[in-house]
Length: 342
Image (cartoon, rainbow, N blue to C red; front, side, top):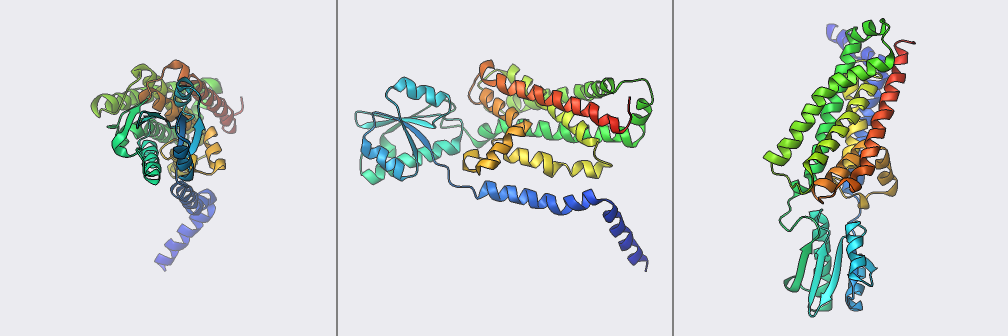
């Protein structure tokens, strides 16, 4: 009977907490659906720019499902490669094949090389691996997976831990009654929000600095751009995660409900942040990444750390991250109305 009583108590507890009950069943389905879309995506189809290449070779590349773009001059092809419109430039010099790879993604590099090898084999010609002269715009043949994924993982872990810690900490302020006592004072809501963000922000800044320094200086992850830009981007990612975490904590009643936001808010961002090739995903899923802050942070970090780009390349991502932070701050101030109307 006592066991039965405990079972009934647990069942009643879950029945009252409908949010936990829904997430218990729906969150795994959401994550598994995303994994299915990511890992069952179509094979990557290389985008190759050609300059004065025999039509037989371009025909074979098209038969191998490659996207072939024709350029009249080498300069136009180089610009397309810098803009990442194509993955490689292919040209013929005497009897050798000149291949210049964009280079920032080893998996894409491998796909281009395999494409050219298969095309050469089909022609029974000179385009074999032995007489291909391969150069790189970014990176090199020694670039490893951690060099490619390092900027993404730096951004993800900073975002994840700041989101979790700030959300739980702000929630405790509310559950312990500290927030209620502060709201009973003449303190304005925007002052309260900025105060909390400033306080938590000091620790998130230290965390962002430590993670960036450790990954680049100690672990030796590829770094070709400015370290100052990396610090700027990690700080902006931290502030975005901080403001988002405090915002969502207003809609959680306990730590368990706060953690339940992870599969809904954090996991989808990981899948769409560049860790997996987006070109192979359904179009609607690619567009979903537009509303996710981590997409902009990891994109800019990759531009700086792998491609060595400067301010002009990351300014758009920086502005978007600042916009997300301001939006979440405004929503935080609005959310406090449910606790006190001023």
